[in-house]
Image 1 (spheres, rainbow, N blue to C red):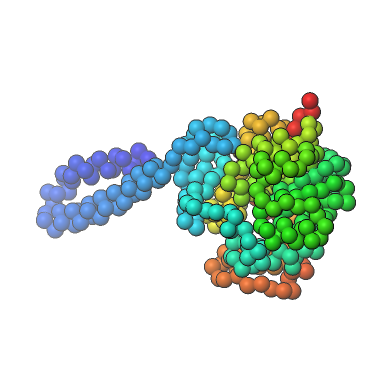
Image 2 (image 1 turned 180 degrees about the vertical axis):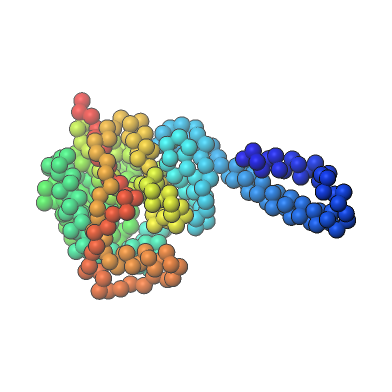
Length: 335
Ligand SMILES: [Zn+2]
């Protein structure tokens, strides 16, 4: 901002212009104006200075560059930064423990940042997941399928009509719900120990999960090892480069740290996939049928009121596309 700098240097030199010769009243006015101007400018400069300090350097997990991460804003006590190279967003949190966070409260409307009523919207979610299964079958018609972060198993129940399915879920209640409904689901994080107990697989899905992982790159790298050559990883997540995300800033519907820790753009997804030896086979922004209860829950939350459950709207769904969420198919090359 060269204008500001020029003005500032003039101010710091003191006001010695010809106006001062026009009388004491005029001089007094000028001094007062000057003082206000200096105060305003120094506040501005302070902000510029502070935001520069808040920018920081990180090795980006998506593009692998040691790059400047621009400070964007603070949300829910977390600094939100963006890699200047690839556009990956990150939330810097202190002492966030996912194991104590993803409990049954999270899925039952007890927490404003969670789901309105996950189990209550099973019908709508399953219809949506049936569509996702159809989509996946265009890339892989059958075989073994692993759902990482499978919640209550609704997707797995749709997928098991075509695939030999298993799942991993961190929330004990949800994992137990899956097992009671006959699914092969393990409780825990997708780490080496747990994955070691599962065999290799043809399809791995992470549906709205990658943004929650403490270290998505490490997890995807482990999952790549788990994948047979020619197999695919299907990811859904927000698009941080989307118009809606950029316009809404801190108010973006998916900007919910510390629940969401990572905000991928198309470029950052591409960069991470390539560096892990995967090919981006498909990327789009799909339409989605969303339970009306979740829409009203999120709208209420955005309006600053405490969200409440509305029983009737659990049965209704609306097709929605804000083009701010993406679906990606990554393929591990055949040998
Ligand atoms: Zn990056």
